[in-house]
Amino acid sequence: MDQASHHSCISGLEDPEKVHIRVPRLEDGAAMWKLVKQSRLLEQNTCYAYLLLCRHFADTCLIAEDAGRAIGFVAAYRPPVEPDVIFVWQIGVLLEARGRGLASTLLEHLVATPACANVNYLEATVAPSNTASQRLFAGFARRRSVPCARMPGFSKELFVGGEHEDEELFRIGPLQS
Ligand SMILES: CC(C)(COP(=O)(O)OP(=O)(O)OC[C@H]1O[C@@H](n2cnc3c(N)ncnc32)[C@H](O)[C@@H]1OP(=O)(O)O)[C@@H](O)C(=O)NCCC(=O)NCCS
Picture 1: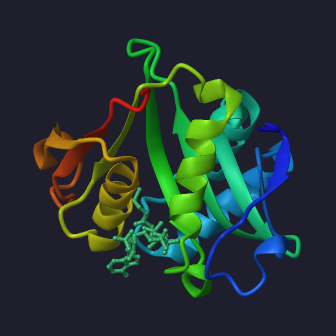
Picture 2 (picture 1 turned 30 degrees about the horizontal axis):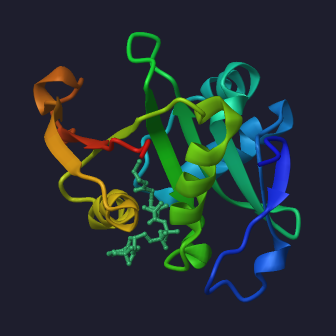
C-alpha cells in the first residue's frame, strides 16, 4: 500500500471516492487538534502535541479528508519497549461522519502501512463509559478473528484531579497469521 496517500473504500459513505486517507503533514496538526476539540470525548492536548505527532510520528498517524476537509484521524505510535505493538493513542471522527465505518477503516489502513509491517498487536486504552470506542476495537478484533484481551491500563488514581475514569487496556492480536 502506498504509505503517503490513498483513497479508501468505505462502505456506507455516500461518496467513498471522495474520502482520502493519508499520513499527516505538519500543516495537519491544527486540524487534528480541532477534531479532538469537536469530539468532546477525547482529552484535549496542546496543538504543539499534535505538531509533534505530525513531525515525529507521521508514519503511524493517518488523517481522513472529505473534499479537502479533515473528518477523522488516528494518532498512534510504536512503543520503543514493545516493538511488535502499535499503540493507538487517539482516534476521532467528526460527529456528522460517525457510524459509517470510518474509524474502522482508519484502523485497517493503519495496520496495513509499511510502518506497521512487523506489528503483531494493536493496543489502546478505553474508558468504560466509551461504548463506541469499545465497539470499534472489539469489531476490529472480531473481523480478524483474533482475541481482544482486556486488562487494567491506567487506573484513575494515576490521573490528576480525581475526575478521570479508569482506562482499560485493549490488546488485540496476534495479527500476523
Ligand atoms: C469512537 C469513534 C472514533 C468511532 O468512529 P466511527 O467512524 O463512528 O466508528 P465506526 O463507524 O467504524 O464503528 C465502529 C464500531 O462502533 C460502533 N459504534 C459507532 N458509534 C457508536 C455509538 N455512538 N454507540 C455505540 N456503538 C457505536 C459501530 O456500530 C461499530 O461496531 P460494529 O463493528 O460492531 O458494527 C467516534 O465515535 C468518535 O470520534 N468518538 C469520540 C472520540 C473517541 O471517543 N475516540 C475513542 C477513544 S481513543
